[in-house]
Length: 408
Image 1 (spheres, rainbow, N blue to C red):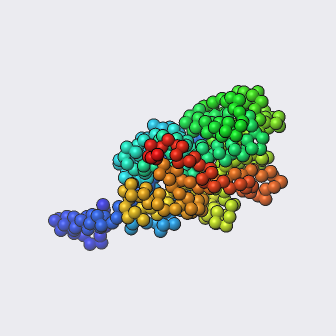
Image 2 (cartoon, rainbow, N blue to C red):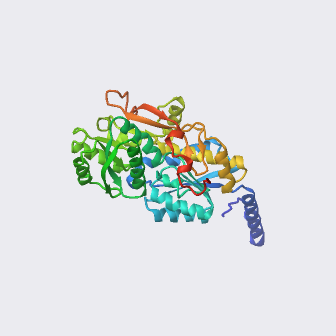
Image 3 (cartoon, rainbow, N blue to C red):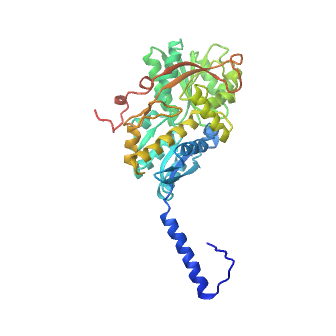
């Protein structure tokens, strides 16, 4: 530390003054409360990069909404790109927990990464709140006493979108599935819904994550003659498969595409002429009500793009976590998680949500249909609401999840 003074001192006097100043600085530092450090880890590049942009800004908004401090401590954000690689995600989590003193990690898109980070969080007894990954196993066999699953999961996506399509006549399915934990779980859960409703699954094909050419996969789906082609993928993979399906004339031939995890940002990338009529499930839409519109306006002042439900999920999870820390009077994981379960979740995305003992946040989900260009009043006017599905209907019953924390 350099101290610049207008008066020169020589010899021992200078040393004494320098040491005194350094001592005062150290004392001031010792008295200042240590920051509460929280992290957002995502696939900020690659196949899911477009979906996760803006999550740091959303986290900043949550911190602003608690006044910038919790228990008198400033809140600091760390962010990192896990590159959709489980080993990278695990390394970052271990360093954040062990070296940087991070108390909570959120984001965690890509189920394989989320499952890897969940293991590290359990080992350290620290909190992970998963907003991006979808595998329902995160509140099943991989549930955690200090873990939560916040925005959606494969079970809810299957229940809401899958049920709606089967009821409307889509009783034969063929799957185009991303070949990793998320895609497998989504195909499994939708298959169960289709069969329970009396439909049948005629087959499926698995594709590598982040592939560019879907032609051979789409030709197999087309030749299956299934009424519905279920896209058990997400992000750029979903966008590319829908675009290329259009080039093959699949929907014109009478088959319907089911986007099983589609985001508002995907629809804007596809454009309404390509995406119109697509039925999908979301946890948030910017134009639902005055509160969602006001939040979106505030968010766009920081990041001028339409927020995805991942963006709002990071805001919601961070806000509830910070409220729980304040209520618990500590940042220790177990009492904070107890408060997170005790307090209802109320924010722009969730009303009277309940965090269950298996870590599942139970909240309403929405079934939307993408508007046609003639129905839209502007580039952000993309959805019409078909139905609101209560959380207790959308999510898997607690007793059926095989979470070891759930007794009986």
